[in-house]
Length: 45
Image 1 (cartoon, rainbow, N blue to C red):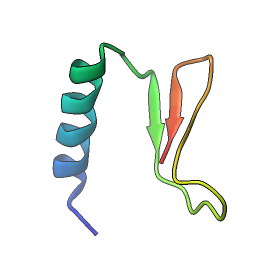
Image 2: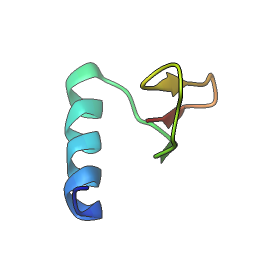
Image 3: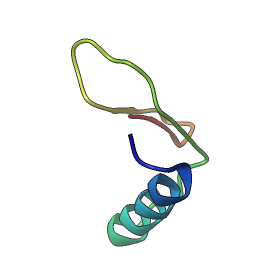
Image 4: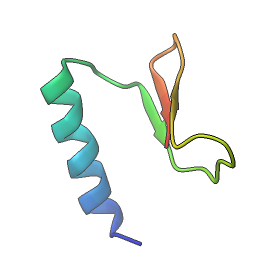
């Protein structure tokens, strides 16, 4: 597991690279996929 500050910095860097501003980012255990995004700008990783 990585420190929360490192995770937040990585999310911010990728958001800038792809030109998005996520409203919410959550870490979740997912069985069938590695990530999902909603139309409300929420990302689950």
